[in-house]
Image (cartoon, rainbow, N blue to C red; front, top):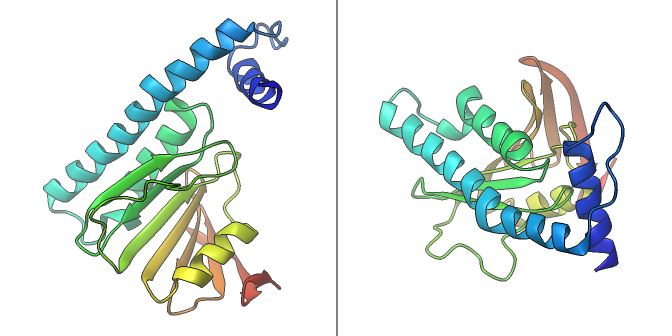
Length: 195
């Protein structure tokens, strides 16, 4: 439990500083309670928050591509940084416009051993967060879009409010990164390796 304990202690410490001073290390029981709350309350709450926002946007009829709107991105970012203690979130919009959400750790997220049942290809958009505040594709992200590029149309990485990266299978080896609505830079790679 040492590594897990250290991870949760860091998360708790960041959330509950007293006068900017770190708190004392929590007991194993406190960590178990925190882990239970995270898995039984906070993760489902974050997932449902995003699903509700997606449905609200769809039902409004104002958006053609809900997954590419500030409103939807803001909801995902809020869930990743405010509902959860800065944990990554992954959202997939499938070929039938169904929305699938899962949560991960501070630096990684996947569907794991239970991929979404009934997901239809092609994937219209894969969105994930970098809650530490930087929009770019990691080597894992590059590998993901390289593997899925024929079955995925768009991918977005969120690094903050008004800070995101956008990928399309029309330009499969680059991510355009935006800050405050303006293009900031383009991240490029060859195959599965960044240039």
